[in-house]
Image 1 (cartoon, rainbow, N blue to C red):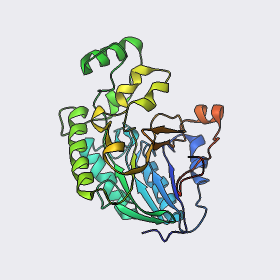
Image 2: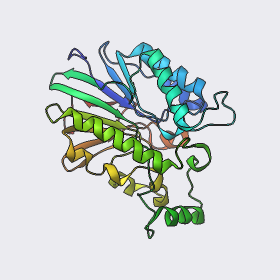
Image 3: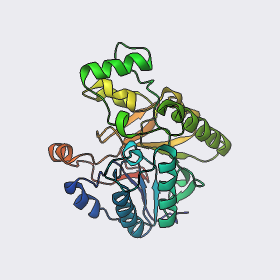
Image 4: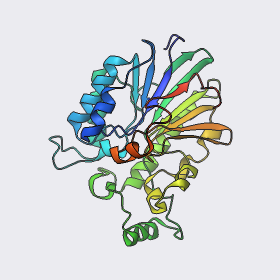
Length: 282
């Protein structure tokens, strides 16, 4: 439990496997000894790089809370760890626990801030192709449109759903398990929901390539920000860092992104986004 003097910060999409992103990650430091950090996925692809980054951050912040992105779940040919699907995720959870990093499989942490207690829930949800490409209605049609336009996520080749038949089957199982946990919490304490993928489709509407949205979440979570007492929703994946509000709930996209992206736009909101206490104006 935080003592109330620190900040709850968040970042995602560090992609430390890219040489220019490693110094960016090395520069991340807390403001106080009591600061907590949410890492909302896509730390890296290779297991050793993920371990390096999470160890670095766990040594600096009072608490680190991680949830996987699609890149951590890839099985690249050059990675000595050739586990696939759920087995790879389980190995990542083991790594985090050895570092003292909280995961979606651990009890949710309670943050005691100046504005009261908040429960921080890291969510591992995946996607199920229900954010279909424009003009399509089914997964099959949407995937066909993506292949026609050449906008196909690398997940289709490197993210294996084993032992599930397909990623959308894995997604539905993750949503069901997570919803059961959230329902059990009740409505007494505000929540910070942290997921790599956005909880609803609206944040994807700004993307240059709308066909990519099908790899960005699931319609099954579209009402979670109103179903539960959500103080803020944290996500990444889109590489479009910004603050938006949906039904009065603050959504924070907290990604660093690829070097070609952050060189162009810079880091106008800073590398670490403050989630709590809520910044003035948000």
